[in-house]
Image (cartoon, rainbow, N blue to C red; front, side):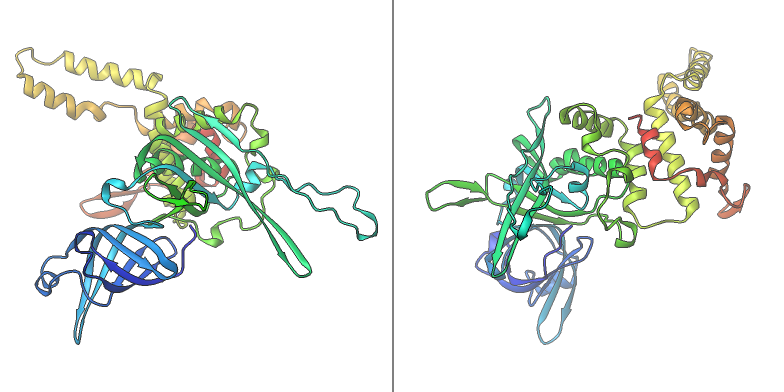
Length: 436
């Protein structure tokens, strides 16, 4: 995410706007936000007691940038010649001063590092052959947006922003794609980002097989507009800054990506953009647990190899629960549970029967080994010969899960010292797990 420079300004509580305090707003690389006040919003007795909470803080920084800081609490103070208060900020909205009920938005704009590479569209057309005598003709026509319309009147599009910069002896044109989501009714920032922005970020990661770095998130709200000279009102950009897990530079592909390096580019998709977005959002909702585990391996800092394999194993298990509820192992487990419940004493109290049924909810389920083998069998044709023996795959991966086990507070080894199956998994294997 693009992080603004530290901002110095004046801050106040909405219900005490007559009392302003100078402060310094600092933002870390991953969106950690702290506000250091040269003073305090609270009385001395409050600072010495429980940490005060501030639902909203308003501010204005240099260059007259309006700020709304949301869900804040005091994280420390210094009491000496004068009082200083340090405040942890949950989310910052740069570009407006809002009340809590005004924090609803009808558009979210998202920029990422490889969106242009994946979209494979540009308004710059090179001349071929090049002109003679150094007589250059420069032209540009912005590409039309790639638009998807969903059933609930939500639209998702890849739009293009551009500019022309002129100076003596130099002319430069810029072009940048931005992913835009528009919802028919103003929606809270958490819902609009969780339902659309982060799943679409996962789509870009999935398609390019490299973690998508969030460069900027802008929101549009009916409560922040610009009035032009002719009286026309246009939405103002409200930048959203908050805690976000981002890949390190050394874990990203910093150079331009080409189609042969990706799982697929947008031009490779055989259907229209609407079908792609609809299918992916449906998959993201249905397999939420599994995909979050898998995508977390992309965005989080690298972990120990064994930890990565354990996370993959958990993702496969979560996938099996949702995708294969009628598999042979699931059916056998359900029948076994039904036989146990049917064999109970008919005079057993209803509360005891309910208690036992809850305890058996996961106790009588397919074993991890069975789940892994059935997932492997489902994609065996695709993965062959890399995964030609699904039974061996299930045995080895299940043993990895049991490599470390906790007994009486002591970690003991009871499996292979190094998980051999871990080398079989790479970034491209997401396509087999998601069933796309």
